[in-house]
Length: 408
Image (cartoon, rainbow, N blue to C red; front, side, top):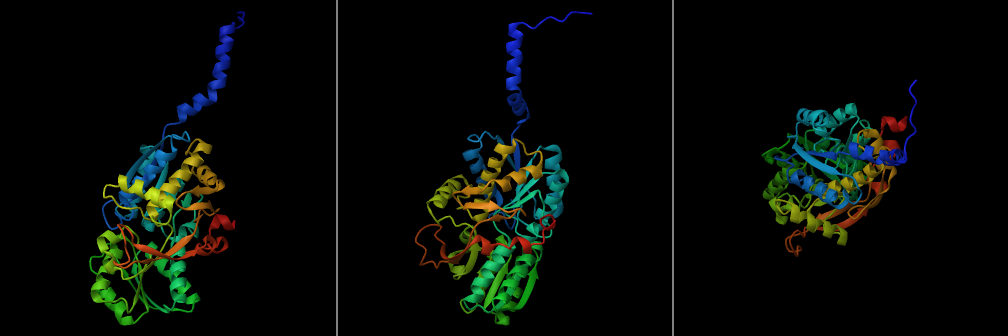
């Protein structure tokens, strides 16, 4: 039997060094950059509302926090064309062949649900800033999902309650005919009726409708106090432009659930007629929001100011990086989302908050009113604050959502 030689001092030192470095070397070998896939509408009705601006916002967060927290990040993006089958196919390709770890943004709730189904199959994390339907933290909730910026409950209830209590007792909806619009109308209807109001009519329209004249004439003939546009992006712009042409306001009050700063350059303040809108972020609210907005505008190809969706992408990316600094990997989507829930949220755009067990990020929602051209004093000075809705009042109570794993 061959006698084993005792290790010399050099072998002992090297062996000890290898053991000491083993965890670090393992982490270095495994730590390819986490790839974030920003999926949204890059070319159609929501391209200004999210589009390249969401990529810009996420990249700003990566620039601010990736190196500082030792979490390497790469960002890729894709256009889902507002088609659920396209969104699902992109998600599958990203996960299966392109090493994408987390999907973010996802305006168009039907697309978001399709992409989330793929993510659940692959156990990957999804963070919705642009996604709106409240079913995503309700009946269709997922342990793989965080709903960051807003949802149809917060906007529908916030706007419906406030405007009805101010005297807007009768409502007419012009609604996008897919999950987001229907859910928004349903949530707002509940709030209107609870506040003593009544819905006197509604119409549905396809996404990216070129002519709203017939819908607006129905709304005008209804005599409703409030005409609410439960749609987004270019569809919201089209509604406001043609409503102005038909002279609906000021006799009838206009409410735009998704109206924001990115709509106004194409619309003009004269076309929105003092409309009311809910939002989780306004660029000119305080020094922190203004500082972010200036950086965002400088980086944006069209030099636009950020809206709440873009702010949500920045804040959610920051929080994701904080969670990755703990988990060291995005391989287990549920584990990553659980870590995001465990860490209190804190950023200069939304302030302090939490992510609830059902994935709902909680923060205030603000009710703003569009300024008149005379009231606007400088570029992008579009809105005036009306009121603040506390997080616990803005978002649906946890026990009312019907999230299966929360009930379990």
